[in-house]
Image 1 (cartoon, rainbow, N blue to C red):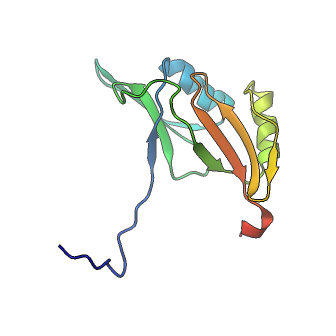
Image 2: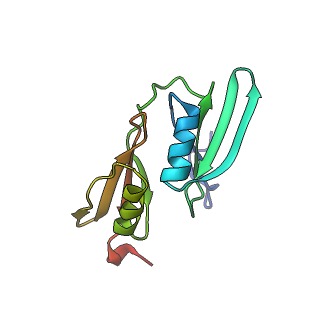
Image 3: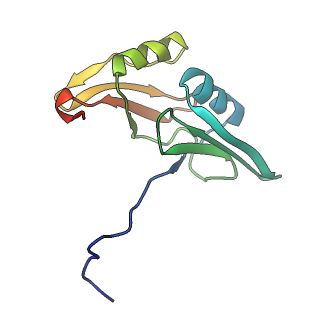
Length: 134
């Protein structure tokens, strides 16, 4: 086995995160209508599998949930984090759509808003400090 790393290792792109939910239609409505994700795919593959894929605006990574996709407990996902351009403006939009979003928490490493989906899966939205923005 070669223990020397390749000069140009292959890229790795995170493109899909599975979110465990109890009610697929309720979760889809929450993420699409309230949070603003794009509904990419909703397909019943067979009688035991339904696959729903949603993508946040501007993201290369999507979330998926459905029937027969995971054995995780609904609401057990913690630490999902998305970087946004203007966390205060997005918080206003979320609250206006009925999302119970936290106040903006300003830290030296960014400003944060947190919220949970109807099952309790937790998200953090981070606006990077100006010094990290391009």
